[in-house]
Image (cartoon, rainbow, N blue to C red; front, side, top):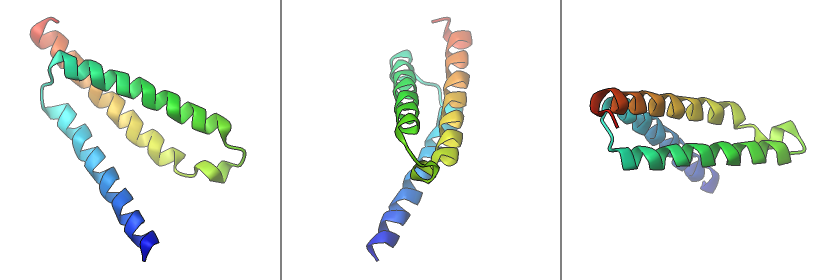
Length: 91
């Protein structure tokens, strides 16, 4: 039962993350928030890189393809948001 509960929490976390990425595509962000999210993107990239380099067996990091897809969508949303901020406000 506990494994099923943890799995559902993980699924809710992934779905809420994807909804937030779509929100980044639609909602305009202030420049300070965008800077913070870009720093978070760089930090998450470093964490994924370090975890991938420190795994001895490929199955230890089996969530890598899904994580890579979500992080790529996140970076795409940040690129769209930063382009909107540059073209809209000139900052």
